[in-house]
Amino acid sequence: MTDQHETILGPPGTGKTQTNSNRIRDCLEQGIAPDRIACVAFTKKAAKESRERVCHDWGIDEKDLPYFQTLHSMAFQQGGYTTDDVISSKDKKEIGEAVGIPFGSNSRGDAESDFDTTGLAKGDFYLNQYHLSRSKQLSLEEIHRQLGDYDVHWLELRRLVLAYEDFKRVRNKIDFTDMITNFIKSGYGPDIEALFVDEAQDLSTLQWSMVDILRQNPRIQVFTGDDDQAIMGFQGADVGAFMRATEKKTVLHQSYRLPRVVWAEAQKIVSRIEDRAPKEWRPKDEEGTIHLHQSPWDVPFHEGEWCVMARTKRIAKHYAKALREEGWVYSYKGHPSIPIKTYESLQDWEQWAKGVPLTPTKIRNVYGFMEMGEGYSRGFGPRSRNLLGLDPEAEISMSEARDKLGLLVDGSMRWHQALTKIDIDTKNYVLNALKRKDNVRNPRIKVSTIHSMKGGEADNVLVIPDISGAAYREFMVNPATEHRVYYVAVTRAKKALHIMLPETSRHYVI
Image (cartoon, rainbow, N blue to C red; front, side, top):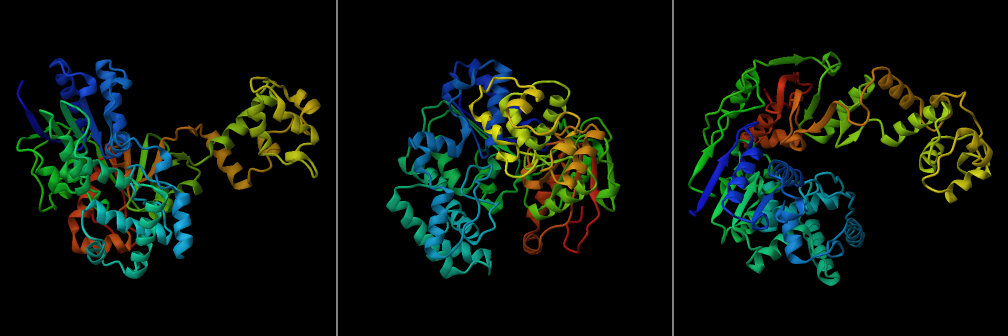
C-alpha cells in the first residue's frame, strides 16, 4: 500500500464532508481498522458532522471511532485530564477580582478554545489577546503591538497575564491552549494509520504544531478545506500552513448548493482576493435569484427557510429585534425567540383546560407563569407545595389540581388570561406566531453572525453589509479578510440571495 498525502480544496457546497467520508471508506476497504483512523477538526460542529456522516454511510458505531474529534478534545483525552483540571469562569472571576480587572463571559465558544468572542468584559477581552499570542506563537508584546488596540493597556494586560499564569500554577490548573501545548511537548499522539484534518484552513500556528505530531506516522494524510473561506484569522488561523501541507492539491469542481447567479456573485467577491489558489468549479443547474431590500420590512419572510447573517453580534441583535417587532419567530445562537418553557406552558394549559391530565413537571412549569393572589406558595395556595412530593410519572387533571394542589382558577380561562407572568408584549408575539402556525421549536428563520454560519446553508440568505468600526479599519489595511467573510456569507444561499442596502457608511460593497 502506497502513501497518500493530499490536500482537498473544496469551494462552497462541493461536498468536502462527503469526500472525506469516501476517502475514509477507501481506508476501511484497505483493511485499516476504524480505531486507527483519526479525523480531527477545528470545531465541534465539523467533528460531529464528519463522525455522523461516516457512521451513516458505512454502518460504523460511533464508539469505534475514538479519534473523530476536535484537536482540543484529542489533547484533553490524550492528556488524561478531567474537567476539574480546566480553569473555569469562576476561577477567572476570582483572578479578575484580585487584580481589579472584571470578567464577564461564561462560555467557551464553539471552537472549544480559550478565545471567548462573547465576553465583553475587560478581562475576557484582554485574555483573548494573550491566547492569540500563544496560538500564533508570538510574544504577547508583539501581538499587542501588531493589533494596535488602544483599549488594551499594556501594563494592565501584563499584570492580568502574570496573575492568570500564577493562579494556574498554584491551583494546578490548565486552559485549552495548555492542552495543545502539553500535547506538543509530549511528542507523540495516538497510534493511527490514517489522518484526516477537516476545515484545516482554520487551524492556528499552534494547532498546526499539534498536527505535525499527529502526522509523524500515518501513511494516509488528507487535509480538507478552502483558503477562500479562511475567516478565522482573529483566532490566529494560519492559512499558509494549510496550503503548504502537501504537494498534491485536488479541487472539488461541482457545487451542489449554489445556483448560477449566486455563484457568479460569489466569483466577483473572491476575485478581489489577491493571494489565493485559483479554482475552477461549477454551480448547480439552477438559475437562482438575487434581491435587494431597503429594510427588513420588505423582505418576504412569510415563506421558506431563511438565514439572516450579520458581520457582528451587535448588528445581528439589531435585526433580531426588527424581526420580533414584525412578529416573526426566529432563532439566534440556537435559541428560539419564544423560550421553549414559555411555549410549553401555554400549550400545556390549553391541553389541561380541555381535560388532558398533566405530569407534575408540566404543572410546575405552568405554575411558574401564574400569579393568582397574595400570600400563596408560588402564587397558588399552600397546597401547591404538595407538588414536590408527587410521583414524576403521575397524571393529574385540572380539577384534581384545584382540590389538592392549590390551583385557584379553572379551564374557563385561556392561557393568555391565566399565565399572568407572561408579559403582554410576549403574549401578543406568541398569539401572532400561533395564528401564522410558525414552528416555535425549530424556527425556519435563523439570525446569525457570518462566522457562526460558516459550514451552514439555507434556501434564502439575507446578508447585512454593514460592518463595525474595528472591522472597517481592518478592511482598509487588509481587505482580503472582509472579502473572505462576505464570500462565505453569500455562498450559504441554496436558492435566493437577498442583500440589505447598507444603513451606514461603514459597509462592505457586495
